[in-house]
Length: 428
Image (cartoon, rainbow, N blue to C red; front, side, top):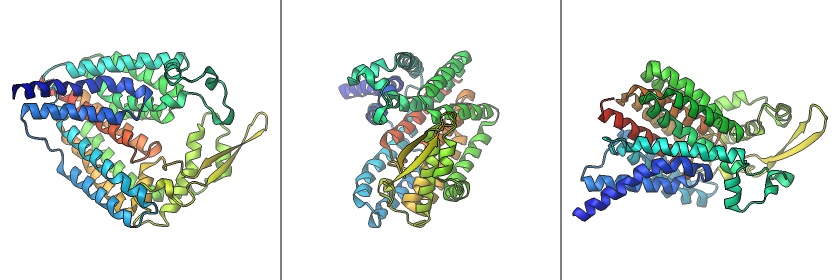
């Protein structure tokens, strides 16, 4: 028994190690967040078993929401337009979401009496920023060297070769989420200049790597956190309402707001260099998705069927006129590039009104539940910032069922809770 307890205590260090590794690994591989999630979960489980404590329970309706959502996803295999896509994703997504809830529930127990987690996030984030800045000024030397890429990839954009920046873009996303527990830790220690410097460097990296959504999440998240420093419960409650309304009203809002959008208007929008092409491009994707939603609004097209939607693999053409040279360039892209890049529309598209109601009700309840957490001032202020960042990425970037994205969100929330518990244990 002593040996088992010693092994469990050793494995529990994996939780703290994951907090150090997450910022660094995120730079080079977003997909590595899934094995990192498993590593952290193993550390938590080992600590729980060695301590002989009961498994914690988070807000029970959250589990009910996951069960209902995945039950609907399973049922959708009966009418899915691609049953293989639907069936293949049900078990892994269910397991990942259930494990994520367990990890978030148990995170406050991890190292609640010491400074180990604080040291890990401070060291890991600082090291990650140094590495990322090095990549920025050396045209991603580490990435090119590790992947064996020639220098010509940086200067030859022929046939759609846009260099190595996209390989590191998701790193800014993950760091933007992990920034909020970092900022809370620094603010609790009275090191607000360091929090500002970290925000500034991260914002620079987001702009440098054309991660506009990450930059937006940092700006809006900082504003929301500032408001939450004044009234945390009020702001968190407002976010819950915004989430529910946003999910339920997504197709109606898209129908109204995107009515004037077509290839011609998007071509005119992209003439302005201040507007990234990806943003204008998604307007056409969202409009296409909205039209498909209304074809099957009640049941949807089937869980994870976005990439198989009729017409989704067809390409649209955008003609961009250079305002100076008057030259015309023609850009082609898919109506749905793998997923809609808006998770609220994706839920409606795949699972219909039933899926939207489940996500809106239980998701908003989960956010609203955060009002009841007993957090120190810095963590109570930054939690709404973290929630805001997640919502911004969900509404403009990633697919709802991307494993690395789900793992990243749960890890960021779990680490925020674990770090907050240290202050609670010390009475701060």
